[in-house]
Image 1 (tube, rainbow, N blue to C red):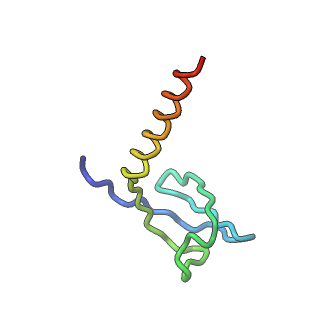
Image 2 (cartoon, rainbow, N blue to C red):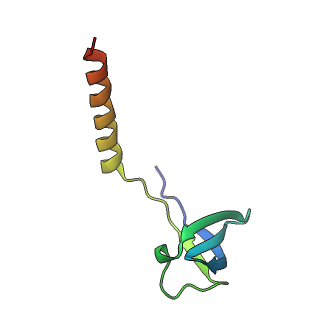
Length: 76
């Protein structure tokens, strides 16, 4: 699978510990905790966001759900 390019986000507002980002050309609003952002981030900053799948946690979660379903199927 080809690697996804980072998405640009404009920091529109920061207040009350929350940052409002406008993502990509569509300016989709995304609200995130301020603590998730680099320390030097200010209103007007442009950030790069990368999404990465956590395959290990996905597999573990799937296995846990499958185990629970098996338990439920075995009950009267």
